[in-house]
Image 1 (cartoon, rainbow, N blue to C red):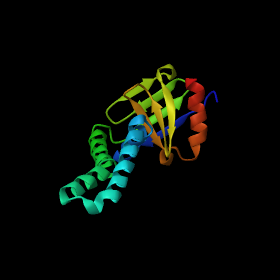
Image 2 (tube, rainbow, N blue to C red):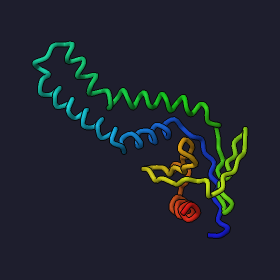
Image 3 (tube, rainbow, N blue to C red):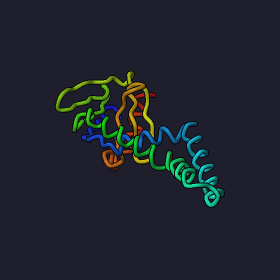
Length: 158
């Protein structure tokens, strides 16, 4: 593994940021509370639908849709805004010296000791550079090299 090198070119998509945000939310206590709240509202809606007036029916529908439709839609809109600030195409290269990031506007280098970790989510790997910065590498970008790449990065940041 000494001279191993990986290079990936990709464009971050709003859908990738949306998925990452939703994994973060629903993998936390906040997501658990959202699910409990939604289930409770569905049960209340089913039980009392015939007994409540139109205004309460509207409120129940909004409540059920809050975490199932409204929140995911708003998170997607935020992801679309974030993607506009990210360079169109990024090239990430990984070798024994670290991570090399190239876009049409700038180039930078991160040493392995500055990488905080790598997280595996369904359909993607997230390379964590800091508490606010990271790189999303989807399964489409990684292709058949995913497992080999994951082992390589884990060996460098351990």
